Amino acid sequence: MSLERALELALQYPLTKRTETLPLDDARGRVLAIPLASKVDDPRFDNSAMDGFAVRASDCSDLETVLTIVGTSQTGGEQPPTIVEGEACRIMTGAPLPQGADAIVMVEDTDVDGDQVSINGPARTGYIRKRAENLSRGQEALPAGTLLASASIALAGTMGHGEVEVIRKPKIAILSTGDELVQPGSDLAPGQIYESNSQALTSLVESMGCEAVRHESANDSMGELRTTLNSLSDCAAIITSGGVSMGEWDLVRKIMEEEGNIHFWRMKVRPGGPPLFGTWKNTPLFGLPGNPVSSLVVFHILVAPWIAKSLEYNEEMGLRLSQQVSVRLAEDVSGAPGKLCLRRIRITSENGELIATTHTHQGSGNIHSMIAHNGLTLLPPNTDGKAGDIIDALWFL
Ligand code: AMP
Ligand code: MG
Image 1: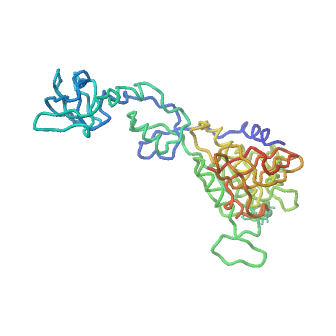
Image 2: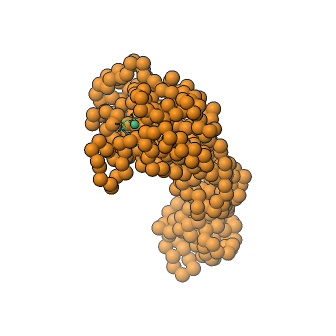
Image 3: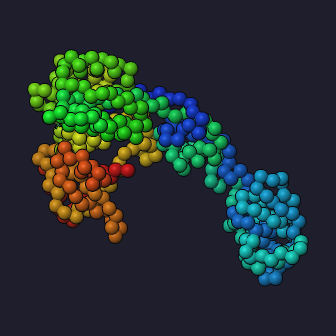
């Protein structure tokens, strides 16, 4: 099955989008559930973009203008005095424009002597920030599905929102499977290796705006798998790693075949061919391959888009792990017969274009290759990439 078809099928069992209202202070990193409209005009009133003097432009056409200072306009202060012909008002950046003024002279272009100011530079209307020139009251400046990161959370604040309705984090269970797996930090017996996928998957699940519930890895035993899977019924989805290939000990596949519901098994991608998707007692379950690179790659290309689409993240402004770009290959990269080929590449910007290089060997067990690189090729099935070709790629954000 193609990746596109696999995603389509998985989306027939989406996560349920639930929402909650949070103080803005607790909403960093969360995703807006509904569009956010401004409660105010921004700016709220005509104000100065410079420290200087508010003047009437028509008073300042002579080179040697001297005006009388009649007051000061301060930020957060009272309404400044109105000015008439021959007068100027001191003004701070952001302070309201006095009635009668239509231009600002920068403080650097003035000389003050008592209550007189001589104007030595231009009086500019462009130094006035007009009411509502950024946003009008009622304008929906943040669409639903926007990640509340630095600028968007600042904009939510600017628009007057002390609390925001965000998408509630669905709980997603992470379960590694394999008799050989031991938690890092303990001693290894012969044949054992350190378990690492659950850490990677937990991190990815959290990066996609969900709450990860990481479980101790399960042994390759039908009984243990059954008990563990049954204990995860309070989770919105389950992600397992390992045990989904063709082998006799690939028990996640076996238990899903016999006791769960498999909606698809295997995708035409490399690496990461054997994932399955199904439901365990109505809970969507992704069975990711155990090879460390494969499990991460399948998360990136299948699970992350499933979460993003289920929860209606905005494609541009929502949470995402990667961005599709065009890259120029610096070297030949072989594709895969009949499969979308996801070679790890390092993408760098050189002379105005994105260049892709490879650095380590590409084995699906080599997790270091996900560190030495920052992207994946999207080489269509049966297509080799030649040095100099421009191809599609995913760039990890
Ligand atoms: P499997 O998909 O269960 O056949 O596992 C494929 C390969 O990935 C084997 O070499 C496993 O030892 C390894 N592996 C499986 N699960 C993990 C894990 N959670 N952490 C690290 N390596 C794993
Ligand atoms: Mg295994």
